[in-house]
Amino acid sequence: MKKDKKPDELMLKKGWSRRDFTKSTAALAAGTGLGLFGGVAPVFAKKREVHHVAWNNFIPPADDATKASAKAFEAATGIKVRFETINQNDLQAKAAAAIEGGAGPDILQLHWNHAHLYEGGLIDHSKIANLDGGDSVYDFQKEAVTVNGVPRGIPYYSIGNIMAYRTDTYKELGIEIPNTWDEYLAAGKKCKASGRPFGQTLGHTLGDAPMFCYPLMWSFGGSEIDESGKVAINSTATRASVGFMKEAWEAIYEEGGLSWDDGSNNRAFLSEQIHTTANGASIYFVARMKGMDHIADNMSHYMFPKGPGGQFATSVPLSFCIPKYSKNQDEAMEWIRYQLSADVYTNYIAVQKCFALPRKPGMEDHPVWTSDPAVSVFATVPQYGRNFGWPGPFGRKASEVQAKYIIVDMYAKAVQGASIDEAVGWAEKELKNVYGG
Image 1 (cartoon, rainbow, N blue to C red):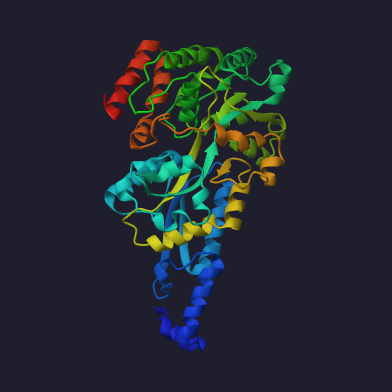
Image 2 (cartoon, rainbow, N blue to C red):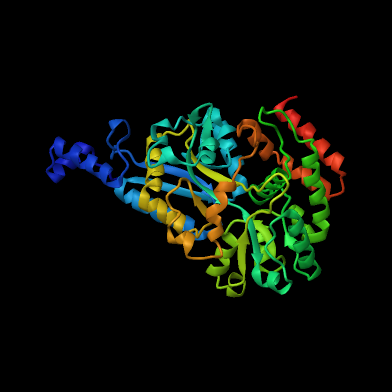
């Protein structure tokens, strides 16, 4: 077997002095914008590799961009990146098994604030948290990874979720964009009566179900807890939101949505089974990518309607998290920083065509936000954003509630026949098991 040359042998072969070798290594690090963490030069005698697990992005060019970046990163640093993608609903189980077992990927992509669930198994990322614009990251993304004042991950980007709809259907039926939930209900009744229902999942799926149910509850004035963290679900406002959903389910929705995952409504919209659904920009982007212009040319997006409690949205924070068991922590940090370098990051966000929202201000004037009216509304989503647990803390308990789908199941139970009292009472009991009281 051919042996790797030691650093001294490489220097002799190339005619370098030790000083030349050190200067060259430092230049390489500076050229890639990475830096040498702790002042330690790369060890070329050891093969360095980073295993990075992320979700299967609904926008395939995003994963292609990451793979291309991995090759460029390896060419620049000698660090190989094994980029693995899995179904997003499997990420949490993968993370839990890896951290509990003390072995697995060097970087876990976590959604929401799941870093709070694995605080004890994730490193302190303070070394790089404020680099690469980290000091100006949106608060809701910082909150997702900051546990007891310690950054247990690095914010990457977020995904907004609003209403995708068929403009031609609305025009034909004389429907204006709904501003309130009552108007939304009236629009849905017209659409379903014409054989073009709305679609909404109430299943145990990471994105579309909670990203619809929480803003619905908030907009009616309901919340799972109050500002002090006390369970507050059993309120007149929450009951009104459950009553709305109980009426709406049969009146406007495709009723098979109870078992849908985050891809089901995409497929239903693209097959013209439904004509309005809560989603990111992925439906539109896929329609364009697949040449389904009869759909893409006749669709757009609008914000979730207002309720008596206001108008709200959620954006899924996605983060890089390095586990304590990783033996490649410095290499993992270098790879994270490479992905956050200006050109690489801007390209990654841009190829997703408004599906991914930047982690900090500064891209508002980029053509990706201004060139296409069908998706330009996504630029406004962060200003309506709230995190799970609002108006209380976005901590471990709020994450546990989301992971157990308590709020989603409250609505699901109601539309399946439980009374409003039964559905809200069940949720109250479950929430008290988490929060206490």
